[in-house]
Length: 248
Image (tube, rainbow, N blue to C red):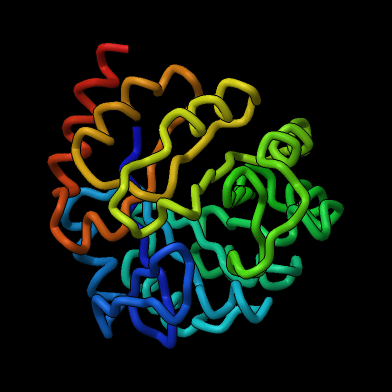
């Protein structure tokens, strides 16, 4: 199972939010490129980058920082990118710059035809972010709740060509309360699309529990504040996951 470091960008800085609240941001670095290099040196096999400003505005905002990261680590590890990707031109530009996977969130709810078109145009490179607040899907950088349920949205994506789904429990994101393993496992078992867990990774025990669920369809977890606050070590977490995965 992949342990995927998150690099969340706000005003060109590397930050972490609590429950997605833009005004509750902790700045960890003014140099996102250096942060990306740090995680790659520690053994990251994939990076998760989010343009937080882009998610709110609906178009790419931190493209300069993103392109600098891509230039620095080009060809070393895959990068999955989300935030403000609402048209095919924006997707094409980032993929041309070296992004391996694009993450669509708001568009999956508000413009499902766009998701289908993106999956056809960029086969195997489209991930959908399903972000939930008490079971209801949130969009627009988590600022707006919808009437969509997690299971309803996810099941509707089957057969479209989505590479994987990132499932985030918003209430746990950045709170150090642990991954919502039960909900993530239930989602993975209910669909035929691979799932990446997100929101609340706190300890190596979370890593162990998720790794033991790998057979259900969970193949990765996004690590944010726990890495930045040194609550877990990336190399150690990945080694534990590798060892447990070998037994499954």
